[in-house]
Figure (cartoon, rainbow, N blue to C red):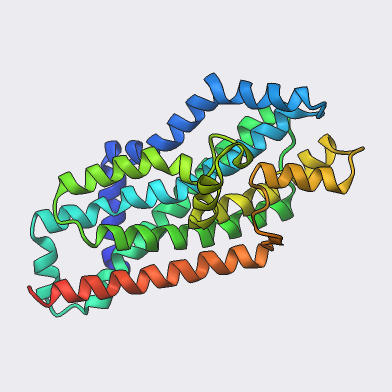
Length: 288
């Protein structure tokens, strides 16, 4: 498993275009934020008399970007598996004495490592941007929390993407899926706009999408200090109203999801899609 993962990692990082396009969605969101979204969000919050708006918005957006990176980079890493199928190398693997679980585990492990590394790099870049913009660097404890969230988020993302990619046997289908996911991921994660400005159906879609729970967790950690500064003289009701409107906390009816619930959802979704993907791969490999 380790050797297969090493081989996949070498192939992935050797293909510079694959690495670049894995982060394309991240670049697009940053560009949209710098050119359009940032000004709109900042001005609307300024109008409500909120202090330290720029740091508040920066932290909100960057937390969302980190969550997006966990799924787009793992998608890029699974390009190796699709290429192996196109070149019929996967048939050779499954016909060899190597156990199927070892082969599958190698693909998943390499994707997980890629997703974690690239998400951490995105997190570091986000912290640098926030610092340059006048914000404060997270405390050591908060950094550890973010890294823990990234670990769980990448697990869920790699399992979800693994399941999707398990159906692809052509580069064209994979490229199309990558483009669609990269385009829609920002919308279904609630990164472009505060969740409160969307319709009820869209709000439900965002809340049901697993990656939104990763974004919520990251925002709760990364925005603790900015919220404290911006709402220093505000009551708890106004703070909670702001958190709900921005997707920092997610509610179903009157029930507010706790951090433990977010983590449980990510883990359960990750396990379910991993099992489904393994079953799908095993079913198809029997035809080899």
